[in-house]
Length: 280
Length: 306
Image (cartoon, rainbow over all chains, first blue to last red; front, side):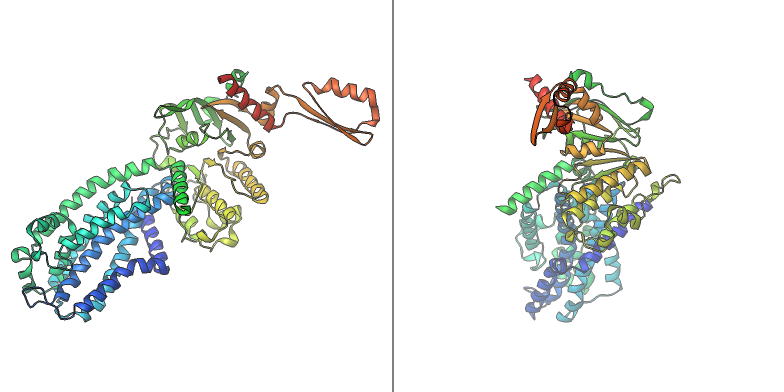
């Protein structure tokens, strides 16, 4: 087990390094971060409707929550789909403990990149907006929130990824996710949404990750604009924990099913399909 | 006649590294394998020949543990591939037909990394993994060690596939059409490599190929798979002797080239020499080539089924 962790970790670090030295990958990771920074810049002096709280100050931590959710849900799913098509996963399967090493490596490399993309938004963001307050309480919140965020999203992302075996059908995942972001109070306060949308948003982890991040980076007074006039740490923990448990129950089953189906001829068939769709 | 061939050479049970009995595979209503039986001993090189769709890849994937069979008994290195664990996997080498995986990795980086998975399975008799520099040397990729994989040529990439297959110093190595896309030189080097593996490490090798010449050069034994069964099992020489065929006799007389086919060339050649004596030059007698034998076997079998 320790040996697998070590090998998986080594794999993650190698992949992390590859991403950091590859312009195209860097762009893919950091493009959303730049987009967010530009959004924050243009929010300027706008305030949360009905209050005099800065909209930018509220959006900055919310978008950090969104980046964490994207890192855990989308990036892992995307990697699984692409790596399945090109045979990376089959190689892992042909290696002793290779699948575990692969998955640990993915968590390390995407975790590292997600952290990097957070910092890229956070550090300049603090200078762009007024009202961010990050104290000991905030650090404490991050200490339980971030690990929980990983466990609540990565297994779900991996489960999603194990369902699709064609990278070109990935839009099917992205669209509903963007819809979810729109109603999750990331860019616009959820309190201004109709009740039924609030209910839907509160089922999924994105809202809670945004809320948790706001609670870590905003002064206590900001809680007044949240649903229930509180940061609702207890509920945040509860919902994310349910997602974590669901993911941890689901992912091993789905990943095993996916791994079982990998074979040379399965990869060859996908290659055939990919080459055909390129020609068309 | 195929009945006589089916039995094949007997491998004593104690020496069987691969043991397949009455293997059957059915996809939906289509039977792909209808009772495949064969065995391989330690250090032996087996070539699996057969027309497209005969079930070669299915067979090899079942032995690799990548596919679950419908029925039959399969034993590889003392375990059933369908339920064997990671320690079993560590003794196995699989050469995959790669496409574009690990494109950003450098050759040495990937071999070094994949080797790490085999460290815990190192034994005194067989230190694992294969040291990267030696391995690069063996497959002729030393000069490309620091190249990113997506920049390799097709031949280099296949050699890397082979290197990945043997990085854990396997006891059994599976190769599915290993030399597709090789130029003649790369093919020759690959053949030398396989010989070295079996000589030095006593590795058992099972390969599929369409290249009869390759099968003849590499394999100790050839299995011909057709219609979901093994229709012949033996060395190239044995197979051609078992298949009744015509030999080809070529000679030159008075500056003219002659060709004649005969089921039994001996009386024909004796007659020829009696008649013309030393006028006959450049005399050649060629028995069935493996290609003739193979065509004949597959054709007879398919004809017999209709």
